[in-house]
Every structure is written in C-alpha cells, then in structure tokens.
Length: 165
Image 1 (cartoon, helix red, strand yellow):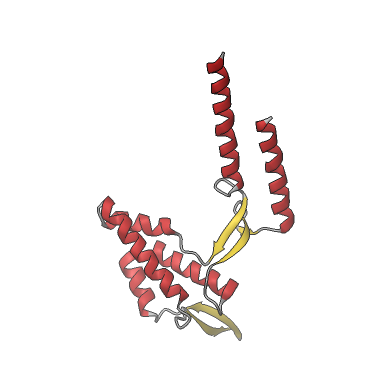
Image 2 (cartoon, rainbow, N blue to C red):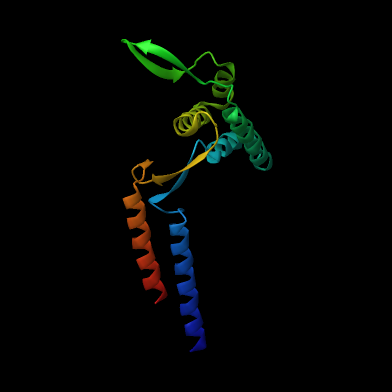
C-alpha cells in the first residue's frame, strides 16, 4: 500500500516539475525572449562539424563570445543606408570584412544568427547595444501582448492546481 502511495506521489511530483518547466518557458508558447542574444546552438552545431566533440564545445563558446563582444561594440556598424526607388532602407554592409570572413569560414547559419541578433539589438536598444528581454509569443514568432501573457499564466496556474489536487 505504501509503495503504491509513493509511486503516486512521485508521479505527481514529476507532473508538477513538468508544469513548472512549462511556466518557465521551456515548452511555452509565451515567454521571455532575449532580443539581441546569439543562438548558441547554431555555434555548437557549426563547431561540431569542424572539431572533435570535446574541442567543439570550447570552440563554440569562444566563437560565440567573440561575436557577442562584436555585437556590443557601438563602433561596429553592420548596416548601411541605401536609397531604393527614392526610399531609404537599411541593408547589410557587404563590405564589412569581419562579417564576410564569418560567412566564408563558418557558413550562412552563423552569419544569419549574427545578423539577426544585430538587427534585434538595433531595434530594441541601438544606443546601448545590450540584450533586452521581451515578452514573446514563440508560437507565432512575434512580440506577445500583455493580455496573451496573462491568459497564458492563468491557464497554466489552473492546470498546475488541478495536477496537485
């Protein structure tokens, strides 16, 4: 009898932990996205193709750290303004040597990750050049509304209460 009760308690604990992970954004539709932060997984995947597993992890961290520093450098301007059909538009500066070298050596995935982080950083904090947290709808890949976030939290709190009861 005690064994059955212990098993039930363990199952409830596992369910509670899964629910808490969902609330923290691991499997969440709504969560906090750090705008301007590099996707480390892209760097890890690229380094796994070029290095042994033990060395790949270290190289990925070094490379990601280097590009995080570049992104924070207020003197580095990745974009240039061009006029197309009488309208000003920001485009990637294809003359930027460090960016060209990055794409040549590491490929388009890392290049795209750096460009995306740069654009986010510029959109959210161009003068300070640091990562900014933003309420995010991961399902629709857009900024979440406050109403969506509150609804999501309330829905998940009800689910957690039911699992505990």
